[in-house]
Picture 1 (tube, chains in turn brown, cyan):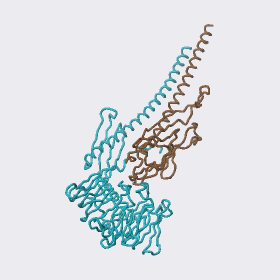
Picture 2 (picture 1 turned 120 degrees about the vertical axis):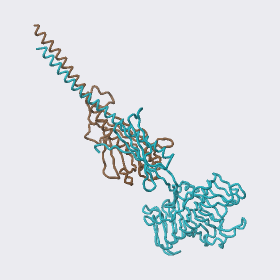
Picture 3 (picture 1 turned 45 degrees about the vertical axis):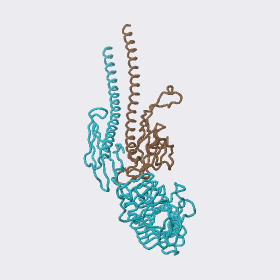
Length: 205
Length: 423
């Protein structure tokens, strides 16, 4: 009888321990995946940000004083001149973000491609973002220029604010019972980068 | 048995937790490293930018400095462990390059600032400019709205009024406020300033005419037409004799036309301008009748019409029937080695008023009429108005001659870009 009782108690304790391990494993696994995703999106964001930041800082490089540098500007795209290869001839550089759902292979329905094109050549997709927005400011009054910026006002652009968000393309699905109204049915790791009022020195000449 | 089982269970539990903990720790480390990397490269870039600004302040205090300019290491504060060094070097074409290289925890950034040491300004910014005043006096009733400069002596006899600053490389005769010099200088004057050297040739314009404009090797007679009255449909009709057949016609707004017209002989010109053109001649330019803008900038400063008349020798207002009853010229006039003058100004009849809207730059001040006291005897009385658009030294008719001034202006600013590995 006592032996039976021991076995029963052991099984109960064992079951509780096993259940605890399983729950702990699940929690650790979820957190680990989220953290892993966080690292991935941070790396993606930093790579995108460094390229965008660097090229925007050199906006107008090699463009003769008085000539137009920014050729077109909207809240999701910009075309400007910059001597990328420093050969004395400015290249026309265009950045724009694609439409949502452009990436059918991504689980994240907000993923879109950030495109880059030089001199009307091949379009390169430099990264996947969920948000890429641009704001433009004049130098004197620091007024926000309404987007899309009128062609007559392009020369007033002296400062650009870039906001970029990257989310993990792979979803971590949530139990439907945990999803509240207005929330997405999956978790996506997210990183936000904003270069507030980036000013190319070449625009201030 | 149970004891062994429990031990195995606890050990297994411990191993699983340990592996997961290690994994979590590794991820946390990666996340911190990622952030730390961005922080380090941002600091490195900030140090390079700060170093460039620091070096620039030194250069502006002493523009003659070359080679190593400054360097600094940070032993405390936000940039602890960082450093930068700056040097400036001369480049061809009157340029300088200031290069600043930073180092912060083994990350390095470079900022290069390029300077122009000469700045080109257009002669068209002056309402009046001469190399020699030729003994002609500024007198009561003369009024100039734009900038005035002479490389020679400015002679004044009476109360002329100058609305913008007046400069001379020499002096006033007599000195302002002394004797007969009662001139009114609304924005002051300055004597003994640097000479503004005239170009030794007009090759910029003649080369431009060859490259994307029109170049003729005979005398040419140009009729300027404003077209329909709409903007940007102006034409230039070219003849090789007065009243002869049209041998060439130019649409001024044609993207393939750069605005430069040049003759290796002389040019005769009249008409209405719609667009931006500069007409040059290796010899003289003759104004045969009125030349006006389609939209007069005195009435509308947004006018996009602009004309340069650039002669290596003289610019004449011809002595003919059309010009002998007033003449109006809207243009920036440049005579490199001669004068702007009325043809036969000593013998031509009293010709009314010569109205200029633009500016006159000439080697030697030319005459357009003669006076006995305040009574005109021959030629024109003058009404010279300044085109306010030309006050900006960077605004000029296409390829209008310019002059250089010493400066230290930033022409370009370059910062290194970190290209992602995947790119």
